[in-house]
Image (cartoon, rainbow over all chains, first blue to last red; front, side, top):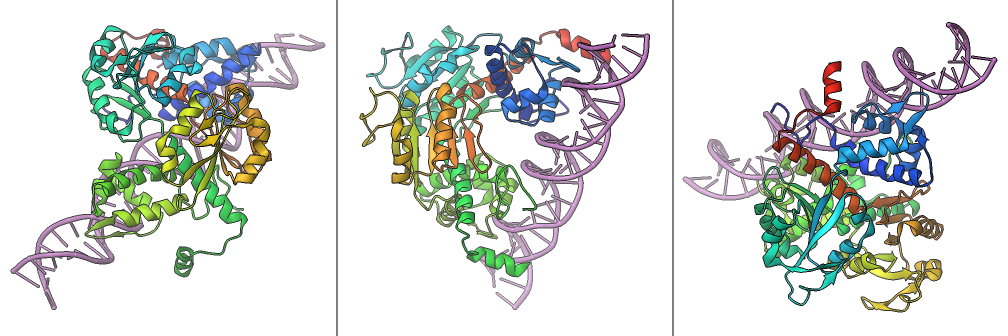
Length: 235
Length: 235
DNA sequence: GTACCTTTGTGAAGCTATGCACAAAGTGCG
DNA sequence: CGCACTTTGTGCATAGCTTCACAAAGGTAC
């Protein structure tokens, strides 16, 4: 109990590294499909779009799986990263909210591909309940707790309107869920020990807009603005 | 040209701060809707789920918009953050790929809300081209360059299958686009000066799975595994 | 077996981000 | 007007992340 971080770390893999492992995994899968047997950190780094020293340091946190002078065995590294990420087991995922986004997620191919399986779909709208989607009937939200329990769901994706998200989160947490992927544009309040990851379309657009604006300002060689004057005076 | 970072910084706002501004903006909009006129950094930090010192430092990068002893004027701060993010102007967004995900994005309410407007939809499938969606006809991908130019599109969202994404990126970049939001599960290769942000559903799930696995390991008090033995021996 | 080549794994340095703690600045009451 | 109280803005210490640079380790050729 000496070190308490934002995220649990049993053997001390940094969060920044964990966040990049899926990226490496994807690059490796691409190489494997093309029949590449071994890859150097340099080549893999290029494929993943990162610095090669960073890649090596990241991999070194998992163990020493490379061969000096040769590189990494693609299949073996895929296995090791998959195991570290917990993808060698099957994760049952429930999607709450079968609107446009929920449907897109349910149909999303890469979703099902590795380790993840859509095990339940929920909606509050009785017009949607019972509908068949990816070979599965949509359940009513009232069944949330019992179905989660019955089908061994351990990860919940919230794709509801913003107003419903916190309520859904409270219920699934009460049902024992500790991992939530939230697409609703709200900050979820959850107890310690529950992991929430947020995917937010408008946030990403806003960040792009910021940089786009900067680029536009530079191109047009726009004159110094009021605040900049003030700053220049201070300096 | 002294300092070249991954992202452009004209007046030096850290990327980490920029990434949080949309979060603050959302929290502030919530407060404004509830009629709150002023808010302290402490209260706003709670609403946004961050540390209050971090919030104050972030805001201090934009300027000195608070009043000591009082807090921040909600409307004024909304305006200042919006201006900094470039949301006081109108951004024309094109969505390429009108599958499940593309439709979800086009219909997504928060998308249109502040500063962003879906100005064009493209697809390669002639069965989809011509279809009406959010009051707009889907154009054929062949029209990409001309429509982007004609409608003043400055941000492109790629919601195509993975195989088509790089090709779409190349074309929109050639057409002058420098801001891309990529939903396809591939690493896009782009020239300097082009910003790409990536939203990846399976990456997020994999990160959740990692933490979920850690939690499960701890709960079951699972014994030390093979690699750990090896590590213990070395130590 | 030795010499040379390639590539990993990591110590160390530098850079960025976080959070504490407090001086400075404003409000409001008596 | 002065005093007590609140809250911002920021200097500073710490923690975390990235990148360089190189020794160590393995492969290959002869």
